Structure formats: C-alpha cells, structure tokens
Image 1: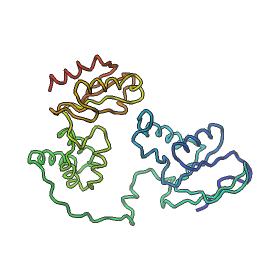
Image 2: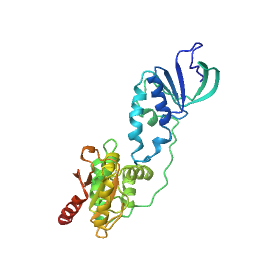
Image 3: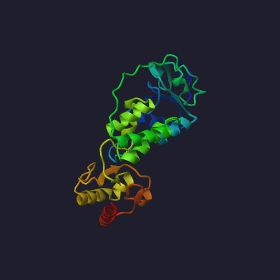
Image 4: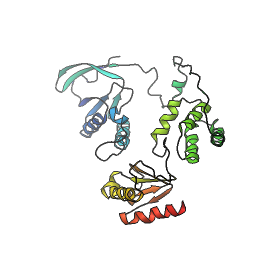
Length: 295
C-alpha cells in the first residue's frame, strides 16, 4: 500500500525513518518544535536494536529504563503518527515540499481496534503447528520429583501457569537444575526453549547452583556513584569469591543487580528479602556475620 504523507503545500510535517531510540527522540524533539511527525519503521514495532539489549554503556542500566519513557510518550503524542511495517520507496520534491511514498505490509487486523490481547495469534488459521519430537523421560530424585509434581499440580490449570511454577521451584530448589526445567516443560506443555528463556531472563532465577544467601549489590546509577563498587569489593574480600561465584560451603553467592528500586537508600544491597541501605564498607562485616550466625 502506498501513501503520500505530505500535502502539496508545506504543512510543517516531517518524516523520521527508523523507530529506534534515535528515531523516537528525534520525533519527540520535532514535535516539541511544533512539527507534525510521521515515524516509520520496517519492523512490526518501534524500539530498534536497543530493545534487544540487556545493559547499556556506561552505567549498565537496562535498555528499557531508557526506552520505556520514550515509548510511552511517542505512543500518546497526538502529533506523532507511527507507521510500522513500512519502507520508503521514493522521495521527491524540494526542501519544504517533499512527497514521500511508503510501501506498507499488511497486518490483517484493524489496528484501531487492536488491544494487543493476542487472540488473533492463537486463532490464526495459517499458524504452523509443529509436531513435537518424543522426549525421553526426565530423571529426578524421588523427593525432587514429588516436590515438583506438587508445585505443577497447584498451578497447571490456571491461566499462564509457567511463572508461578518457576517461582515456587526457585524457592524450593534455590536454582533450576536442567532436569527440573525439562520436567516443568513436559508437564505443562511449554517447549523447553520457552521455559529456559524465562528461567534465564530474570536475575532472581539461576540455572547454576548458588548459595543459601544471595548477596545482590546494586550497581544502578545512583548506587554506583555513591560507592557500591566499594561494597562489592569488601564483600568479595571477606568471602574470598568474585562476582557470580559461590563460596565452597554453598552459603553465599555474590551478584550484582542494576536497580533494586530504592535509590533513596543508595548505596544498597539485598540478601534474600532483606534490604540494607546507606551502607559503607565498615557495615559489610556485621551484615555477613549476621548471616553466618543464622546459617
């Protein structure tokens, strides 16, 4: 489908090609100057490559922390029209009076009525259903199998059961053995790839054995500039382990996180459900000794 974006006479409109972080910011800057903006992208959604990043330089903050405010503002702005699945075919005219032709791929849904519920995907008549290959039985210790079976049974018949199942498995086992993830996939009907994707995405989950106490030192921007690296160094020195390592007695695992949502307490760290804020290096020994005494 072709569409001419600019009228024969200048109307103060601009076309931004590419809906990445730069394109979104350019669109917002142009609308701030009173210019109508058409934001195009050849993908099904804006966000670009940045939406695929876990961390960004130099603070290691998550990409969505930077993108989310712009995505919301672009989506709500009355002077920004987002044209996805669109490619520029030709540009003609002179400065102030360009005529742009776009080629837009069909979506086969009415975008004005779409709420993003996903019902169209689950009911699509052309959806490819792949016959799964038979999988060998999952070998588990009897006690572990009994624990997992009880967890799966509690949530199996509820909508979207995978996350609550993994949360309980994480609490019960403290990490995800490969056999446990394969058992969950087998019993819930999810693919192993889907289960692994969720198990490896969230920082509170782990697919490698970890200690009874996981010490998460916040390395978000606020905590970092207030000295969280010194806290990390002190914990590492006391426990004789580096980041992402576990003590030989399986009591402590040291990790860093990008934000724990309490910037007013910076620098801070968490151990289990406990949050410790406004820390100095001198506070670390007492915190560690407290956990050692409980353990």
